Length: 262
Image (cartoon, rainbow, N blue to C red; front, side, top):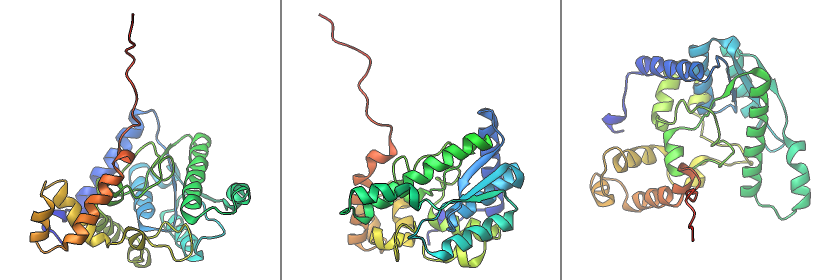
């Protein structure tokens, strides 16, 4: 792993906690809401939010469906219990079932996007009831690769860990005491049986973290990155994925309010 990706975890945890607390206060809030999926990213954001705001001010929602792995729900419950957060459980299957029934040929990608967006609808409604802001749980690797659903898991009021690569998420999670079985399990959006992030992407997070850092922060060309020992095909795939999903990382294009007059 690149030495540039190492950091002081205690100092970073404090820095993120201040970021959360200050940004909520600036918006007139002191509470947070997030989806607790049972994965490492949401577990880390939950832990950091509790560090910033206190457990009583962080509400976690467990939002499984009929396709979810039972271990994901178990891990989600483990996180909220460990942190002492208030929480709720809602199976979202009845929410998307009419859409599936109306489109029997719907593939898993479409269904996955629908589930992601329905979860965010639920979280924003909960945020209104709890009087808190929705915390995003995406990391920098996912952000740069566009591995998120627009208006689904890509939507939030605050993004506390979008500056952290996946390897840094693991390091900080381990430092904060997130259980090993969550830190080290295969990353998955848990949208269908057997789905994993790395299988979807076609390369590992360890590879992507380093290649993306060299592309973005270091500004190296693909050839220069390959010269460092990375597979040129993987480098090209990472670059291609980042370019293909660039539209997800910017505001929707709009025309200016300047009209032609005659």
